[in-house]
Length: 231
Image (cartoon, rainbow, N blue to C red; front, side, top):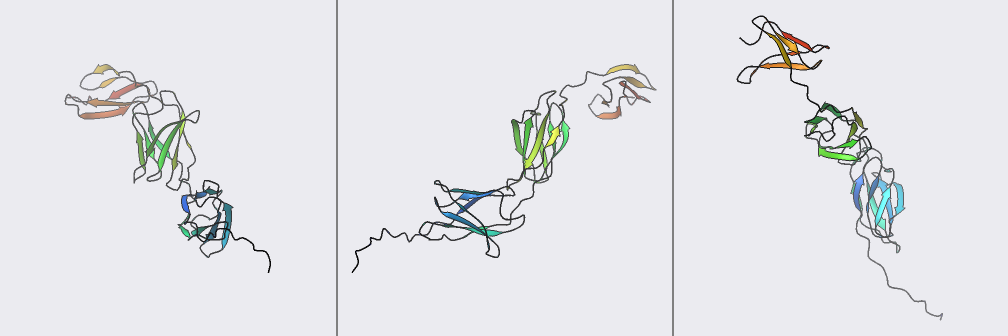
């Protein structure tokens, strides 16, 4: 009879199912048993990628080995060969949102539209984040007041729930300076006219505050209402 070979403590415990934290175009990542072999399979059961979880259990595939719209599963196998239950990977969203639209940018407001329910981020010219908000179900977003100061430039992006980020939309130099008060030069039955900021919208209100007329000042700042909208 041969000398005996010791059999160490048997590991008959399978790892717990891996957790998928991020699944987008650029990345599929999460946590699994420390140092386990993490395997991705497509919907047909074919292996598409493997990696080793770190000592802290984190794993990452970059880019995502599953294409846009694909689903699959992920398992972890320990050094003893015990395999975890599979975790389903839902349909991959690898499509980035379109670039946001900036509709208004003045002292009081920066607003527009982006992908519905996306995270909208404003960065200044240096690339530093200055504000974030969430677009509504209709895609509308609004920052009040404008997080960029008068004369500043920046950019706006949208990130969907899967973590895909849109291209950046440039925000031109912010005009946060109100026009000076218009000048009324003539006010009679036939005419109400004067000067205002060039190309500005000139609005006449009656004593109650109701708007009675609007027009656009010319490139030289002149405006005219004929006849006078005030009786």
